[in-house]
Length: 270
Image (tube, rainbow, N blue to C red; front, top):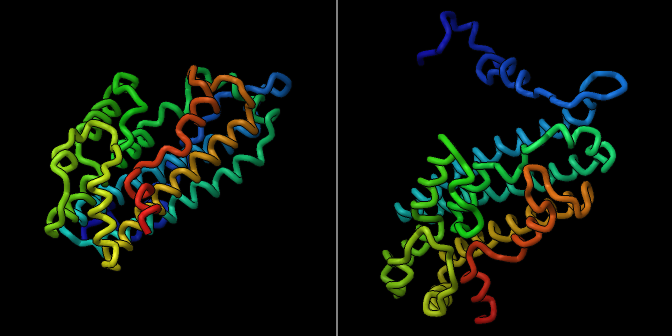
């Protein structure tokens, strides 16, 4: 094993995880008008959102791998890693509980210092939406540089849903041509013929298990969105969000719109 250090004993826990560098990234920008020091609660806000971005990175890592597994027809492997993503989503929701310990007054103490910075600008979360097929809520020109390139690549790439449909097709089931040949840059829309095919195969426990786990993922994303909306309402009410977004009003528009509408539509068929 080749270590990035001259001596093996230098390869410590802190060195491996780059802890000094990691702990240097929480740079507060606020200033308390009475003490001249940064506002106390800004530290929590920064750490929570940095941790979100780290989890988003892991989710993208996992979802990309899940697409590969489905394309290789490894349904069991895909389900295993989907369950890991579900656990991460639960963790994201749990972090909101921590963030909600901050009162509106505590958030207001440093909010003005955020200027145009907004979670609305999270390129990684937009990447997550794109890989799940949610491609109707963002303009690519909102992002620049490497972020813009990554998003453009995601926007033009097949989604997790396309990989799922490929499993059906390779197993010889009737998948409508408009589903197989759809423009992957477009949002996913319901297809009644595809729904009939999914229902016909539901007796296969491996396949139905995959469908249910994908539905769990969709529901988990909705749970996170709901908690996010309520946290924003609780913290800033109906004020506009930082960065010029519509705040809770915009976030509320994303609720109850599934990533995989066919998997919800089939519920009435049983």
